[in-house]
Length: 83
Image (cartoon, rainbow, N blue to C red):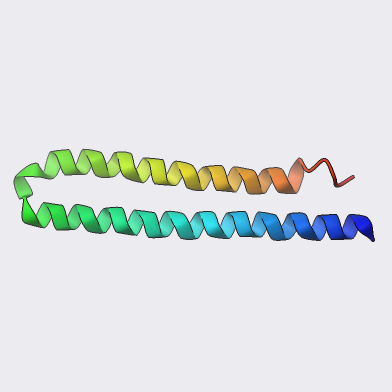
């Protein structure tokens, strides 16, 4: 019974990690891309600089999402409390 509670907690925690990482990355990517389009519409000549900074920002946002997924996988498969 105690092991079942630990497994359920690990599954819920991993699900929260996966879901929040996906939601956060989606919101972050949307905001960055929207600001890129606004900046490009206002100053088309700055497109190269804006594009470079947008790619860096999206890469950092996705890295945080990957870290969240890794934490979820660790909770599922490397949990020392589950035997």
